[in-house]
Image (cartoon, rainbow, N blue to C red; front, side, top):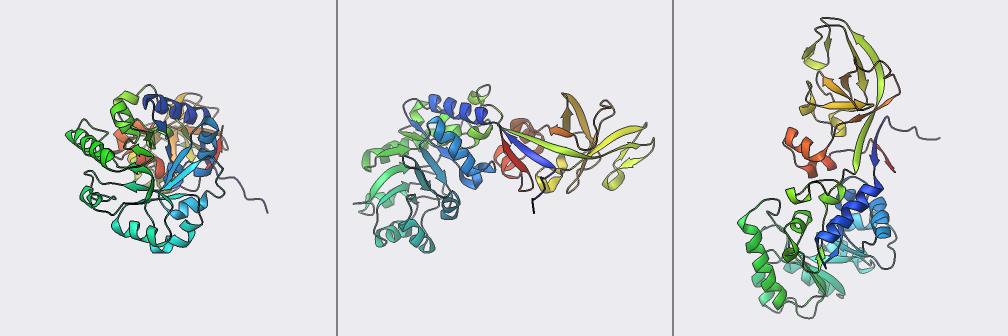
Length: 348
């Protein structure tokens, strides 16, 4: 039996994705530019993103867990894959047979990796975020002696802001670079790339900017939108004057109004914040305001200005990441990863 297509889709722009990576690579100066493809490439599809960025010249990729590494399948020669969340005891059998490298974050990670026979690895040092990573004082012991460290890395906590912590973390990491031998050193995420070449070291690890997010003002005008959200019209109907639309009857028609009911709702990451005219769809470039409340699976828009919009047509949902973040109060990261599994994903 052939599975029917979903009546909502993400159209994903290969050219924009590659252009974003190339801009980030240029902004990082002489540093190699990698790509964070964790969380299924922020919801775009990790395998498809890897294929496209590898063809453009990217060689370094990062996932969160060994399950994500396994989901990528066979790994082409010449590409590097790092697993950011370390190596649990349960991960050891898979990690031993994998070409991916663990990022060792704790004394326990280091001990487990040594006990498993070691091999190439990466090491995360915490320089002030107090999330994953070895403490700098741990590295002053013999803990890391003899490890084959390909990348020594840390992670910036406040790079999306002009914050004193950025310089403090940079200073700490520079000291670690002088004390710990590794093939390469890496500090900058997307926002860190925008802070300038001092933060780039030998390898950058952008994520959100690859997928169309604006991590800092320096990226505005350079980063292109990768994801277009589209939903299909399930029904067109006429609401009489005085008729209400949706839960709570929050919209009451002041005059007879033509509406289209779209197959999208908050279960698809299209949030209730877009209710009552805050959100927009577009058909032929014409804005179609959301009316009434966004519900779990359905959203109504005013199509009075578009007499040709009919059942089965596709309309585009306004979902510019930076603008939607401002409207919703959510981060661009959340907005991307909230787009769920019910979408068709098609690359163009």
